[in-house]
Amino acid sequence: MSATTITQEPDYIPLSMLNALAYCPRRFAYEFIQGEMLYNEHVVEGTLQHQGIDLGGTAWLGEAVQERRVYVWSERLKLAGFCDVVEQRDGKLYPVEYKKGRPGKWQSDHVQLCGQALCLEERLDITIAEGAIFYFAVRRRERVAFTPELRAETERIAAEAQRLLVSATLPPQLENKAKCRDCSLKPLCLPDELRTLARRRKATWEDEV
Ligand code: SF4
Image 1 (cartoon, rainbow, N blue to C red):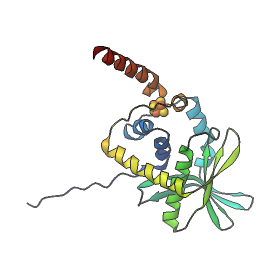
Image 2 (tube, protein in one colour; image 1 turned 180 degrees about the horizontal axis):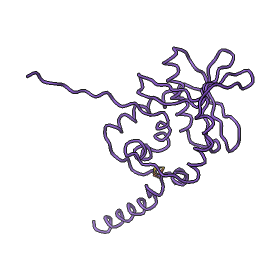
Image 3 (cartoon, rainbow, N blue to C red; image 1 turned 90 degrees about the vertical axis):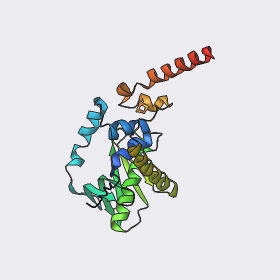
Image 4 (cartoon, helix red, strand yellow; image 1 turned 45 degrees about the horizontal axis):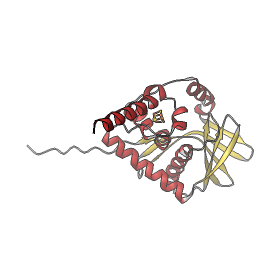
Protein backbone atom coordinates (compact mmCIF):
# COMPACT_ATOMS: atom_id res chain seq x y z
CA MET A 1 0.00 0.00 0.00
CA SER A 2 1.51 3.34 -0.97
CA ALA A 3 1.78 6.14 1.55
CA THR A 4 -0.66 9.04 1.08
CA THR A 5 0.54 12.57 1.67
CA ILE A 6 -2.13 15.04 2.65
CA THR A 7 -1.22 18.63 2.03
CA GLN A 8 -3.36 21.61 2.92
CA GLU A 9 -3.08 24.96 1.22
CA PRO A 10 -3.29 27.92 3.62
CA ASP A 11 -6.82 29.31 3.81
CA TYR A 12 -7.60 32.55 2.08
CA ILE A 13 -8.01 35.45 4.47
CA PRO A 14 -11.10 37.66 3.93
CA LEU A 15 -10.13 41.25 3.16
CA SER A 16 -12.32 42.48 6.01
CA MET A 17 -10.22 40.39 8.39
CA LEU A 18 -7.10 42.31 7.33
CA ASN A 19 -8.87 45.29 8.84
CA ALA A 20 -9.55 43.37 12.06
CA LEU A 21 -5.93 42.24 12.34
CA ALA A 22 -4.51 45.68 11.58
CA TYR A 23 -6.74 46.99 14.39
CA CYS A 24 -5.96 44.27 16.93
CA PRO A 25 -4.58 40.71 16.61
CA ARG A 26 -6.88 39.52 19.40
CA ARG A 27 -9.91 40.86 17.52
CA PHE A 28 -8.80 38.98 14.39
CA ALA A 29 -8.47 35.75 16.38
CA TYR A 30 -11.93 36.15 17.94
CA GLU A 31 -13.63 36.96 14.66
CA PHE A 32 -11.84 34.77 12.15
CA ILE A 33 -10.35 31.86 14.11
CA GLN A 34 -13.07 31.49 16.74
CA GLY A 35 -15.98 32.83 14.64
CA GLU A 36 -17.16 35.19 17.40
CA MET A 37 -19.16 38.30 16.50
CA LEU A 38 -21.05 40.66 18.78
CA TYR A 39 -23.77 42.93 17.46
CA ASN A 40 -24.35 46.36 18.92
CA GLU A 41 -26.14 49.41 17.52
CA HIS A 42 -23.01 50.54 15.64
CA VAL A 43 -22.54 47.17 13.91
CA VAL A 44 -26.22 47.04 12.92
CA GLU A 45 -26.18 50.65 11.69
CA GLY A 46 -23.10 49.91 9.57
CA THR A 47 -24.81 46.87 8.06
CA LEU A 48 -27.90 48.93 7.19
CA GLN A 49 -25.82 51.72 5.63
CA HIS A 50 -24.08 49.12 3.51
CA GLN A 51 -27.27 47.61 2.08
CA GLY A 52 -27.35 49.72 -1.09
CA ILE A 53 -23.79 48.77 -1.98
CA ASP A 54 -24.31 45.11 -1.13
CA LEU A 55 -26.98 44.86 -3.84
CA GLY A 56 -24.19 45.12 -6.43
CA GLY A 57 -24.70 46.33 -10.00
CA THR A 58 -23.36 49.20 -12.08
CA ALA A 59 -23.95 52.91 -11.47
CA TRP A 60 -22.74 56.23 -12.89
CA LEU A 61 -21.25 58.95 -10.71
CA GLY A 62 -20.65 61.95 -12.98
CA GLU A 63 -18.06 60.76 -15.50
CA ALA A 64 -17.16 57.68 -13.44
CA VAL A 65 -18.58 54.18 -13.79
CA GLN A 66 -19.02 52.29 -10.55
CA GLU A 67 -19.13 48.52 -10.26
CA ARG A 68 -20.49 47.61 -6.84
CA ARG A 69 -19.58 44.58 -4.75
CA VAL A 70 -16.77 43.23 -6.88
CA TYR A 71 -15.19 39.92 -5.83
CA VAL A 72 -11.38 39.95 -5.94
CA TRP A 73 -8.59 37.68 -4.75
CA SER A 74 -4.83 37.28 -4.64
CA GLU A 75 -3.20 33.88 -5.00
CA ARG A 76 0.14 35.40 -3.99
CA LEU A 77 -1.11 36.84 -0.69
CA LYS A 78 -3.95 34.33 -0.07
CA LEU A 79 -6.51 37.11 0.22
CA ALA A 80 -10.09 37.18 -1.03
CA GLY A 81 -13.16 39.31 -0.59
CA PHE A 82 -15.29 42.10 -1.96
CA CYS A 83 -14.50 45.64 -3.00
CA ASP A 84 -17.54 47.77 -2.11
CA VAL A 85 -17.01 49.75 -5.29
CA VAL A 86 -14.49 49.70 -8.12
CA GLU A 87 -14.67 53.01 -9.90
CA GLN A 88 -13.39 53.61 -13.41
CA ARG A 89 -12.43 57.20 -14.16
CA ASP A 90 -10.15 58.59 -16.88
CA GLY A 91 -9.14 55.04 -17.81
CA LYS A 92 -7.98 54.26 -14.26
CA LEU A 93 -9.44 52.04 -11.55
CA TYR A 94 -10.01 53.15 -7.96
CA PRO A 95 -11.28 50.86 -5.19
CA VAL A 96 -13.66 52.68 -2.85
CA GLU A 97 -14.57 51.33 0.59
CA TYR A 98 -17.62 52.55 2.55
CA LYS A 99 -17.38 52.88 6.33
CA LYS A 100 -19.93 53.85 8.94
CA GLY A 101 -17.83 56.14 11.13
CA ARG A 102 -15.46 59.01 10.50
CA PRO A 103 -11.78 59.05 9.48
CA GLY A 104 -9.89 57.64 12.44
CA LYS A 105 -6.38 57.72 13.75
CA TRP A 106 -5.79 54.02 13.02
CA GLN A 107 -4.57 52.62 9.72
CA SER A 108 -6.79 49.53 9.62
CA ASP A 109 -9.26 50.86 6.99
CA HIS A 110 -6.30 51.82 4.78
CA VAL A 111 -4.85 48.32 5.05
CA GLN A 112 -8.18 46.76 4.00
CA LEU A 113 -8.43 49.10 1.00
CA CYS A 114 -4.82 48.46 0.02
CA GLY A 115 -5.52 44.69 0.20
CA GLN A 116 -8.31 45.24 -2.34
CA ALA A 117 -5.95 47.17 -4.62
CA LEU A 118 -3.29 44.44 -4.41
CA CYS A 119 -5.90 41.84 -5.41
CA LEU A 120 -7.12 43.97 -8.33
CA GLU A 121 -3.56 44.59 -9.48
CA GLU A 122 -2.81 40.86 -9.48
CA ARG A 123 -6.03 39.94 -11.31
CA LEU A 124 -5.77 42.64 -13.97
CA ASP A 125 -1.96 43.05 -14.19
CA ILE A 126 -2.17 46.80 -13.62
CA THR A 127 -0.88 49.28 -11.04
CA ILE A 128 -3.35 51.21 -8.90
CA ALA A 129 -1.98 54.39 -7.41
CA GLU A 130 -4.81 55.32 -5.05
CA GLY A 131 -8.29 54.60 -3.78
CA ALA A 132 -10.72 56.19 -1.36
CA ILE A 133 -12.74 55.54 1.79
CA PHE A 134 -16.19 57.13 2.08
CA TYR A 135 -17.12 57.78 5.72
CA PHE A 136 -20.88 58.00 6.28
CA ALA A 137 -20.51 60.06 9.50
CA VAL A 138 -18.92 62.97 7.63
CA ARG A 139 -20.26 62.04 4.18
CA ARG A 140 -17.00 62.56 2.39
CA ARG A 141 -14.22 60.56 0.84
CA GLU A 142 -10.73 60.28 2.19
CA ARG A 143 -8.15 59.71 -0.52
CA VAL A 144 -5.68 56.89 0.20
CA ALA A 145 -2.40 56.66 -1.73
CA PHE A 146 -1.01 53.14 -2.05
CA THR A 147 2.50 54.05 -0.97
CA PRO A 148 5.33 51.50 -0.75
CA GLU A 149 4.99 51.70 3.07
CA LEU A 150 1.25 50.95 3.03
CA ARG A 151 1.76 48.10 0.55
CA ALA A 152 4.52 46.60 2.72
CA GLU A 153 2.38 46.90 5.86
CA THR A 154 -0.58 45.25 4.11
CA GLU A 155 1.59 42.35 2.94
CA ARG A 156 3.06 42.00 6.44
CA ILE A 157 -0.43 41.78 7.92
CA ALA A 158 -1.54 39.23 5.30
CA ALA A 159 1.45 37.05 6.29
CA GLU A 160 0.76 37.58 9.99
CA ALA A 161 -2.84 36.42 9.44
CA GLN A 162 -1.57 33.12 8.02
CA ARG A 163 0.79 32.74 10.97
CA LEU A 164 -1.99 33.34 13.52
CA LEU A 165 -4.29 30.97 11.66
CA VAL A 166 -1.75 28.16 11.95
CA SER A 167 -0.91 28.92 15.59
CA ALA A 168 -4.66 29.11 16.46
CA THR A 169 -3.84 31.05 19.63
CA LEU A 170 -5.62 34.00 21.18
CA PRO A 171 -3.16 36.93 21.29
CA PRO A 172 -3.05 39.04 24.46
CA GLN A 173 -5.29 42.06 24.87
CA LEU A 174 -4.03 45.43 23.65
CA GLU A 175 -2.63 48.04 25.97
CA ASN A 176 -4.40 50.65 23.83
CA LYS A 177 -7.47 51.75 25.82
CA ALA A 178 -8.76 54.02 23.05
CA LYS A 179 -8.95 51.11 20.61
CA CYS A 180 -10.62 48.87 23.18
CA ARG A 181 -13.18 51.57 23.99
CA ASP A 182 -14.32 51.59 20.34
CA CYS A 183 -14.20 47.81 19.84
CA SER A 184 -17.50 45.94 19.55
CA LEU A 185 -15.89 42.83 21.07
CA LYS A 186 -15.05 44.57 24.35
CA PRO A 187 -17.86 42.79 26.32
CA LEU A 188 -16.42 39.45 25.19
CA CYS A 189 -12.74 40.29 25.48
CA LEU A 190 -12.92 42.12 28.85
CA PRO A 191 -9.60 43.94 28.37
CA ASP A 192 -9.92 46.17 31.47
CA GLU A 193 -10.65 43.19 33.70
CA LEU A 194 -7.72 41.24 32.24
CA ARG A 195 -5.37 44.19 32.75
CA THR A 196 -6.50 44.53 36.38
CA LEU A 197 -6.03 40.80 36.94
CA ALA A 198 -2.54 40.92 35.44
CA ARG A 199 -1.60 43.88 37.66
CA ARG A 200 -2.86 42.05 40.77
CA ARG A 201 -1.02 38.88 39.86
CA LYS A 202 2.20 40.85 39.34
CA ALA A 203 1.80 42.63 42.70
CA THR A 204 1.15 39.31 44.49
CA TRP A 205 4.17 37.73 42.82
CA GLU A 206 6.41 40.68 43.80
CA ASP A 207 5.16 40.45 47.42
CA GLU A 208 6.11 36.79 47.51
CA VAL A 209 9.69 37.06 46.22
S1 SF4 B 1 -11.37 44.92 23.32
FE1 SF4 B 1 -9.28 45.64 22.83
S2 SF4 B 1 -7.93 43.86 23.11
FE2 SF4 B 1 -10.06 43.12 22.99
S3 SF4 B 1 -10.39 42.55 20.85
FE3 SF4 B 1 -11.10 44.66 21.10
S4 SF4 B 1 -9.34 45.97 20.62
FE4 SF4 B 1 -8.58 43.90 20.95
